[in-house]
Length: 356
View 1 (tube, rainbow, N blue to C red):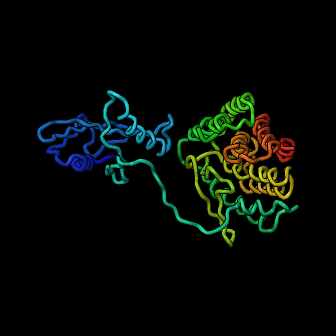
View 2 (cartoon, rainbow, N blue to C red; view 1 turned 90 degrees about the horizontal axis):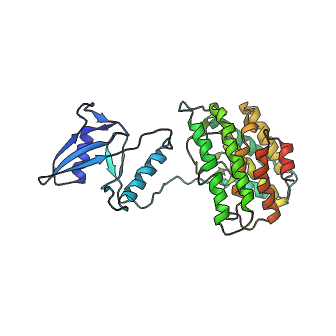
View 3 (cartoon, rainbow, N blue to C red; view 1 turned 135 degrees about the vertical axis):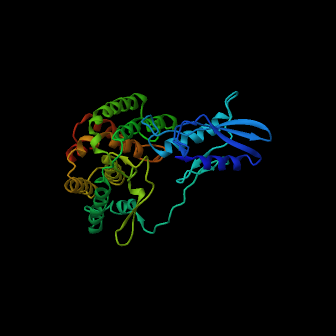
């Protein structure tokens, strides 16, 4: 809620020579405040001239406004875009509403930033590349696998008391978002590197859309997730404590997203360093999946993970980030991205078959 006196205080700061500020058109509402999504008309007397302004917010809903980032993005875009179009009503300020209901301007923004703590340790990807010449993982690698599973169990077991349709939103984003399947498919076309033909990419996209409809019946799986749980986003310290970086794409989603983000890299790094999917990476993959299912009891994991593997495979095979991959290895990964969608259940034997 936005208290009436905070609205008046905001306009006094925005227009220092304002003589009188009156909120109009809402006399029938609670005088204490105004809800989000409701336009608020404000009449301001400026040196004897009366001007009217409208405060607009975006209401949380299921039309792509579920997250605060959705709503903030729309407001920030509006501030820039309204004033770039002839004869459009002018935007005079943009800002945020504090937890107390105060209105604060950010109209001089250009870009945004975040400041985080710095954590000491090593990226998990360093552990994985270190064992490329080994036939089996080290004891520390086995311990880290268990730590990673336990971490995911800790967050995935939290089933949020939120709109279950957030699951559908997350799956829609998986297929159609600019950072996910369709966006990555487009990037293969604009990258300037012809590593795969358009017909192949179109087929992957069409099959992925079918999976959107398959996953609609799994809304009860909505959980707390990380959203980008890959070895470049995991820091491990000397005591094998885990710190994660760069959580992405919302608080809630499908647990298979995190599992796929990590385990695709056992496949990828094995192919990259050894040319085949084999130990020690195959062992790590198998142990991770088994331990995860045993600990969580999530026996549907391998029925829903397929399009998440497709997305992650499109990432690691992408010539933008990995331009020097052997063409044969790249094609193995891309075939995997497509063919995994043809199977209702994933198994270690299927992985062996698809990347052989």
